[in-house]
Length: 472
Image: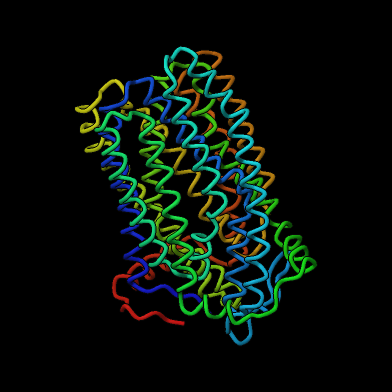
């Protein structure tokens, strides 16, 4: 069943992003007000460690969701690279069920491994960086975050499945509901004196609700639950093993990419407390948080159109592929630049009124904003390759991100502070990944830069004019 998005899907994509941004905007003043500078710095570290969920995922949720998309679009079988082009376009529920069974076993193992790592080396790390903080509060809060990471991994693939079959509206409605609960709990628990422990409890509840609602929405979407129930045959061990081996071929490479993205975007926040104070780490963490939110807003159409790209590929629709890629790139660049200007002119002055000591300078924000822009711009183009079930960029990503961490440690050791963190990332990504993959993608799609601008603008106008009915 070919995936096409309608105006409602795009509207909910922005509602979902707006709620995510709004949740940060609502919670941040309370977090800044109720937490000390050290506790705010520790909260920034927790946010980075919470990103470990995607690291332990090791690319499996993305790869499984992509193969679910292929089965949903009618593929007769899965392949290690590329795909069998769909002929009749009817969902292959037997293949979907077999893929989901393999997915469930894989994530049980991954979640267990994550819990062990959080309980042992993770706790030792928290003890070390909090050695000068009195009381059990940091470790109690860490316990909630660690358990949340376990649950997020074990159930996290259902939200990816929702997006894989093109249920963009449903996926974002679930996110809005879960975020609303997190906002309410965070504010209430902070106001009630729970401190950083309250943020941990709220994060745990957000993850649990997101996963449970995602599973329910997935099974109710366009008869998926009934279709899966109609497949009476249980997947055999051999079928599960074979499916795992097919998925593992690219999941292993996606895992390398996940590790590289984590090193590029979060590792510096974990390294910085070893060379800077927690208060200084908090300044850097806030700049990363603001620009990450901006990147998510600007990338709303990027995220929404991943299943469209996958569907266009498995349907062998090259024109749709070119137009979708153009929409992704043009919308991201335009929205990011507008958003960065808004943060500099309006966001920073407001934050300075709340807690000036933790607010980054304009120069620092622009520096962090530049490398965040480069990371997502690079990903806009590599998504083309991943949606065609290929991951040729894994090695380059890992080398660049490792170089970035090495440069960051060296520059921090030389006393460069926050600017060492910023420059290390810009240099490591700018020397290769930022330009190589756009060039290769344009060449393979036979898409020129002027065509990208024209197609991107035309597709954005279509979204504005499009009626609510879903095409299929």
